Length: 370
Image 1 (cartoon, rainbow, N blue to C red):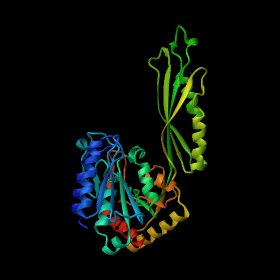
Image 2: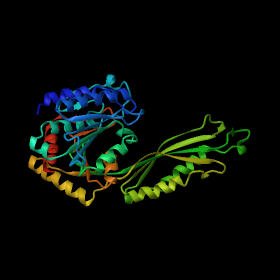
Image 3: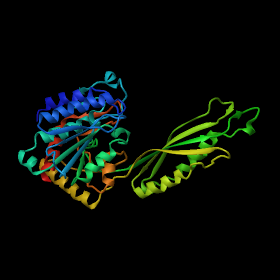
Image 4: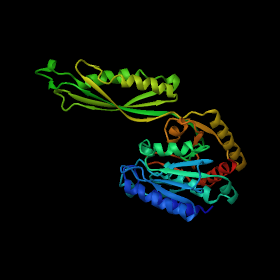
């Protein structure tokens, strides 16, 4: 492969502000990637997913296929706001490249493209390959989830090309995620002259934080974190309003059902007399757990790694991806097939340059083995 060209292409798409809400930026990234696929004589079309997000992209070597031997998945958006590129554009220091989305996941998108660019003609004639690139993974794929799911259900297996972990491991399992906002409505009163007339929303919130934390079960991998709280106006007024945001992580989808039911039951509950609670679910991703079919796919990837001299190891991780939704449909799905990186969602995000070419070879070999 031509690593110099790869890096030039990577720099081009990293140096575009394309947080999920920066629709023009996501659309610019999609336009560039679409052109790259079309230059390779792949069919690549934009997919409208509504006015609230940028377009999706779907590339394939067989546009009339009803079924895909493999669906490769990646996302074009980042978590970073407009102006991030101006503050810290793409740069290289030693063996690492830095920049917003360099490993989460512009390099994963490029590894898919390069694996397909270098694919032998016989494999391309034998297999039906689909590539789905969505614009809103970083906000839980709310607008693209159905589209990805319908493609996955028409696929033999799915490979999500998020970055490999810092130690090179691929991802066999991901925790599920759920987010909730609880709002508390009390009664304001003067804290000195008439405190008995007030009903403290913050006091109710404090009870709720403690009670909800008891729903966690570390032995089953279920964790609960109240990460944001707010409320009140000034210290001498009994607070009428407060709210909290809760993050739930789980390894078992039955655990999610238990916790979800318990939190939803707090809707209109009074943690403090006359203080009403409102529950609103913000996000939800099911847990990704290996099935027997997934384990067969894992063995195939391990064999491909051995053929390429790459030690394939697996990890279970806490963060979610599009693989969570796809695995929940019963489709064999694995993740982490991009190059090695770390520091995701932070200014320290990096990509290991010497992992690019080996991970392209691995992805290419896996596809050829199907």
